Amino acid sequence: MDTPSGFSTTTEETLDPSDWADVQILSHRIVDDAVAYLRDVRDRPVWQEMPGDVRDFFTAALPQSPTPLAEVYGDVVKKLMAYPMGNIHPRFWSWYMGSSNFTGALGDFLAAIQGSNLGGGNHAAALMDSQVVDWLKQMLGFPQSASGTLVSGGSMANIIGLTVARNAKAGVDVREYGVAAMAKPLRFYGSDQLHSCHRKAMEALGLGNRALRRIPTDAGLRIDIDALRKAIAEDRKAGFKPACVIGTAGTVNTGAIDDLQALARLAAQEDLWFHVDGCIGALIAIAPENAHRVAGIERAHSIALDPHKWLHAPFEVGCALVRDGASHRNTFAVTPEYLESTPRGLASGQWLHDYGLQTSRGFRALKVWMALKEHGIEKFGRLIDQNIAQGHILTGLIEAEPTLELTAPTSINIVCFRYRGDGLADDELTGEALKALNTEIMLRLQEEGIAALSDTTVHGQHCLRVAINNHRTRREDLDLLVRETVRLGKEISGAPAGR
Image (tube, rainbow, N blue to C red; front, side, top):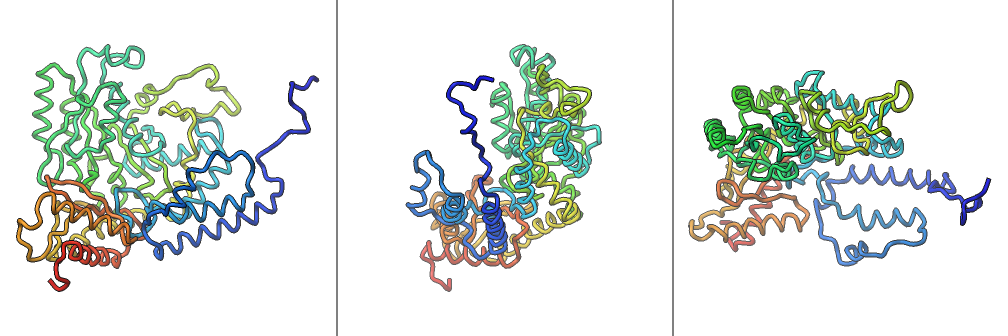
């Protein structure tokens, strides 16, 4: 047989190591280092600024020739592992993430070694993917007939659910003819506390930001049901088609949870799709002491949730659940000849890519599956209760400290507060000056490696925000936060130490 020009069988190469024994030795060292990295996480700064030489390292040119693997790993240790975002640390409370777990990390490693593409097919990883989705349906009270798909995170999970909602309510074959063929423009509704991903969804779906009507919230920052009902009536009268209401099970600013029972009833009365953004709080449904907070979530048509938050899976894994499995599949499925099913063999399994936008899908399920098997769902429920209790403990500590004040009611595990000072006249620290002071406190807490907080604005007031979504957080960490916030506030504002 002729050999293609320029190719010689003597030059065949592979990415497998030439000496597996050396790789095995290094791999054992990496695992030992990984155990120590998590075991000793409390002893390290939450976050630290990278020095110039580390930043410069990441501007190096494309490598042309090989480097020994041990040397490559040495760079990873020195330049990467020492400067994390910090979200696995017990005092990382910035934004709303998750703190990972070692078993899940092993799952990610094994998933990469096994190497399956979860677009579908007849193989074990695909069955495990479907099993994890089934388990998530059980956690949220969804029927077995519902469908779901694992995705990158909450933003994509929301986009999946809202895409199904659009298609189900369009009144035309929107996949074939597009949104321009709809007789009436659709309207979606959510509170003024909605996550920004919903705007992105409206834009990506071709509906535009104005198709998403933001409804005012009550004193507890939950959607105002009467205002929602009025908005729906106004839109119908104006020639729009109300299509979907988005309930929030845990707002990003304060953790407020909409009245999901009332929203489910209203959606049924108004013939709306009921979608729940549960990326923060959906999994409260498994928490024995707090499950009542999300009652009604099981009545949703679709739910977005994030196992990489309160199931503490390593990034990334989100999930979209859809009650009507046929509507879900009909929104995304495309079957070209090269992806047709066969009666036997590899292509005889379910095509999981029929339920989302990705044809190539990573094996996200294993890290969730292993941790759930190891710990059991009851423990994860208790950890959620623990975080919510810690949120209320911190609230009590803030209320007891004269120099601090709450800026929003604490619903679950997100606490909003600010440093106000003790004995200072109101006009000494107001407006932009008060914002600047609290921002500086936040930045110094980060730069000193004490804690990572974020900031936001609630009811027109700038504040610091603590999101306790971490299975490593202890009571002592909350005491430290209050103590250090007060210290820095007095230091920055120039208040006497004993004041």
